[in-house]
Image (cartoon, rainbow, N blue to C red; front, side):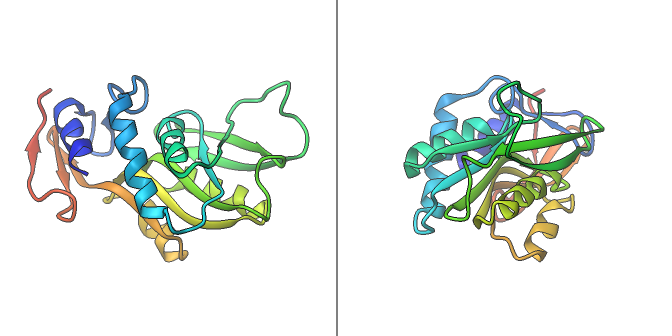
Length: 201
């Protein structure tokens, strides 16, 4: 997806060989036009799948999920990481370990909003080790929902999350896949971008 790749090249910051900072347009400040295009792209990829719900995780997955839900005309449900006074009973839960934050969170979704009658598209901003996606898969499976696929904005192809999910038989659609983060440079897999581009920062 050309617009997304341009944003990564122009505004992304490589913090280490495993961490790419994209908080100027994706997971802190949000670029609405980019999100609109991301929503259209995911909708086009899954439009014939009979999606009834989009399932994501707070907070960075919400913006692309909402834009995709707008295009597909389906509700978006996000798993909460934090406890709430109004979200205490009849929950589907899963434990998710964050390698970036080095902590485990219990995520939860009310059983009012996902059921065996749903065909679910799971979405998130990043796919690295796959723990968040697997947590969402666990929640969908506890609800006995059908999983149509997993939509990812940026996949780190050099980490094992994508392979793990695909080996389990899930359809994973990533809008761009990064093959390496080395020396302040983002390298994209050939199917998304064919050359190394030096970041501007």
